[in-house]
Length: 250
Image (tube, rainbow, N blue to C red; front, side, top):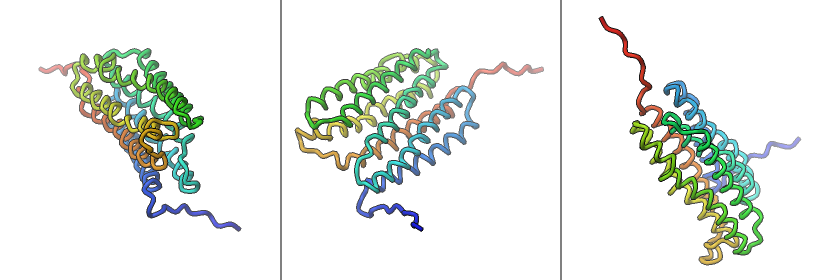
């Protein structure tokens, strides 16, 4: 009878460490967001549910990615893009949910979902099917950037930004601004990692290798996904209460 194989974290491998830490951090975040749904106003419950789904889906994928990495020592590219294809569009949905009380329409939500999905599909083709040539990497990287620029524009200057500014709720306006910074700064880690792969600009120009890019991806995933949820939670507990009819007094 074969003994169960125990996964061992290499003591000198920070990438393996962040895979395990990321898994536990996002699992804990999901539990927090699901439990806190009962404490927020009704209009924000769906937003907290989506936050819990984002970190929950990521936790499941990190469970498998950590095992894959420990056993093979290779980048779990396919698993990572499956995770991103599910969670990043949900992160974009948060922009719609936060501005929905101010009049955001479903068409805005679908535009954000399509843009984020386009960004990820193009990025996956560029990374997973690379032939090592700069032309392939640049072409699909440029196509992927179109989707990213659209989401970035909406968050800073487009309909999302305008709805947040005009909704007369400082908590929502501040929350959208924080999420916009996550897209601008936090998401910048991913194209940097993309350009470190064979054929990428940083790989061919500066000789940067993609062997340790998972370390930065893991840290960025935890910060961005948990951070998105915490911003949404902050909006939910800090926003103006829905107006209710005044109680008659004698």
